[in-house]
Length: 465
Ligand SMILES: [Zn+2]
Image 1: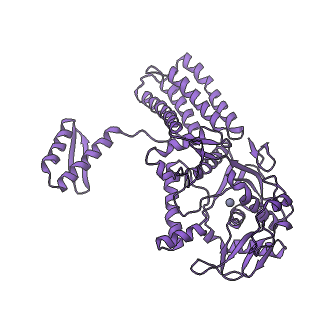
Image 2: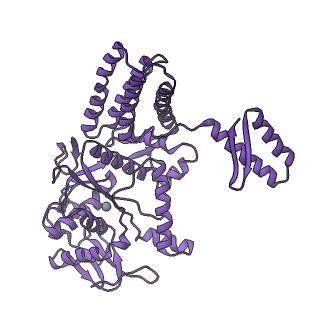
């Protein structure tokens, strides 16, 4: 597989450190609110990268953190009058609800900053001992000029960065590029004991410490949004490589930006959407389809019109899947005809096309096109007279490929069951409201359609007459 590596600015052949194994880290959310549509993109992209690597036989360990110690969380805890931990717990639970609806698998580990404090302190201490960090009255800063490779990921050098940096006269830092590793506790904030006094970690150090804790000193892939390249990922490299003297990540993979109706997303423009907002209007699987219809490095423009297109595309996938399931249940023919045998021999070309696209820097846009070619071909070739073997083989391939990108995974809802359950619920409510006339009318209506209701101790059960 080839991946575009931000570090070398080239597409490179992916070669893991240990054959058959992939160690992968991606920056997760700060859990002070529902996550927004811009955050959703890296979560979906790195979920697909992980699934594809697993599909091609790798054993992947994937770490995605939760930032549960942060100014925004502390502010939210003051606003809501609850502890910072309660804020984080709440939004971690909400993260999983949205992530599940977006079809994002759980990472191998979802570490929290608050559970990684000893490892963070150890790393900051190592940096201090090596002369890469200094303590000013309980605040510890990274001394960027002592790490000469600083700027290598974002393609900048220290002199240019220093020339462009804003200098704050009251700053206790030695250089405006230096960044906080450990912050002295302020009244009312959560804190931990440390060699520098009571305090809490700066933002950047958590990813270096968590990545090392769960994946070791050098990892294969580090992912995140393009907006994190500078300074966050640059700082992660300075911390990780500065403390161990070895490379941090071999491949740096970054997804592109999201615009909303051709404008940059911002709170002040009022075009800032959480995934939860979008879920009011669309099934979130549509959002996943929308994101994956573009290459992960291209900027994408989020609009109702484009979401509508994604919705239509997703419906075409489901229609094909359910149609094949229907044919399997209804066909009388079991063995393939000679014509079908020829068609089945030709089927692997869609899989090859899919894998070729995904191997080329995770080109999900072309990967999805390959699935649609399979669908078009199946729609025109398969019919009531097709054999079970032929339809089943086609459906198996469809499920295999859609499984890699995590689309069209839902089973067909039994419409009758859903309708009957809804009517039973309505009848219960009518009885609670002592509207026995309505309750009886619902029961009679169902009886006319051949559905018998039974009131049991475990609730109302139904069966076909
Ligand atoms: Zn990070």
